[in-house]
Length: 81
Length: 190
Image 1: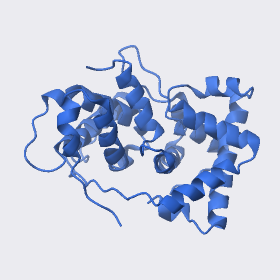
Image 2: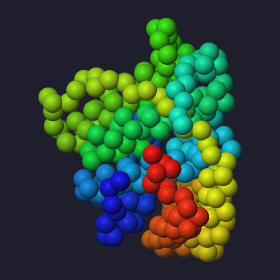
Image 3: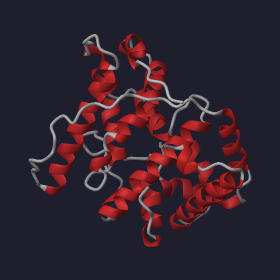
Image 4: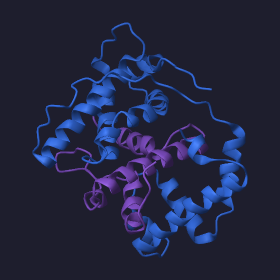
């Protein structure tokens, strides 16, 4: 687990969100806060996200994380088929 | 105790367009698929790559022909995710690395069954959070990744930075509460 430096806390927490915008071509785009992190901060964000998703899935009745639900919301909106 | 399921049990329903079957497949595939992107964490936003890869899996699944081995769709997902990550890295860094293995092998899908006691402890600790950190964390969870933090913060009459600080605080308090109940999250979430 990469530790989160105090100065990176807000950027890491923003990156942990499963919300991702789409680019003009309809592809899932990187979170703006991710670009503001250096390599160590990005590794910390990866670990924090993985931990958060497992926790979300643990307490979700269908075992789904917010990543899964974000993708399924796009599928339900008629995306990609 | 972990199990090694064949997620292709959901394949026929996914190919027929059943989003519930795809949800079950994602629930089994996501943790291992995310882990395959770890080596890219410093150079691409792996959350964005993962979501894009899952959408492409849904898109190409109707044309997927299984090879008879277990977890064929998962192995395809790993290839899609890695290829996307490599493309993204090249787009951002304009760097071509020759040391990157083309196919470092596909990990086994493993599923750890949910411990009902652990789930109850997490829910109890989450419910015991002070109001503002609790509200912020709940807003994130109920948004299911479909709304940006700016919208969630505004709904709670918080500035975005305050909202993020509250979530960080909520995670810290949750972890402390679980530790007080003898739960080591670092171990449980491996």
